[in-house]
Image 1 (cartoon, chains in turn cyan, yellow):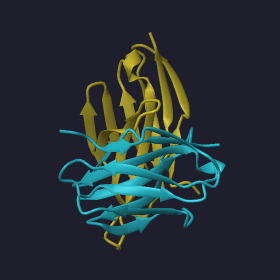
Image 2: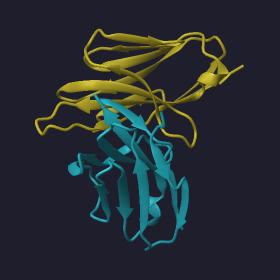
Image 3: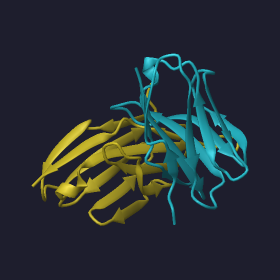
Image 4: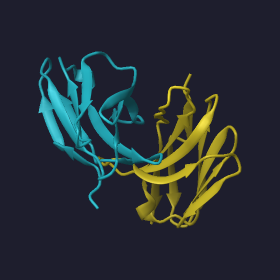
Length: 110
Length: 113
């Protein structure tokens, strides 16, 4: 079975631009969560979606938004990028309280 | 105040030298405590979930234990391939019907041959 798939794997953007990150969950998983991991820190919760509805939002500014599609895949959008948005963005799909993470998208803002 | 504190921040062991990693937490109602392994540039890889004090789980050279305030990840006779960052995360009981994972900063383990 395929695991959680994230794209792209790496991305370089300029300050002020926007970015869209994509995630395909494990087949059968209806819940997707997004996390931001800054170098040297643990992952920090951004959003959780279940059955296309937002279930939770972490302490991130409104520049961050997300959505989940009918096939349970998800997008994370970040507008007006700042240097501090440089991080590894992780997607996790979950079933029965088991969270499986993708390999992440490494975003560098210059 | 951090809800999840991991110690030490970094640990260097010789191959075969057993040790323990600590994860202390301060949540009002614990739903679950998770251990993950993370290799550089990769996503976290699931190891264990513990749900109640006194619970223990084992996988190869790793054993995780849980008390009401902390969890330990014991590594017995480690090998160089055990080198990674080990992350602890807690899941808090909420009344809203959803819960998320709150992670510690991790312990970076280096096992030398």
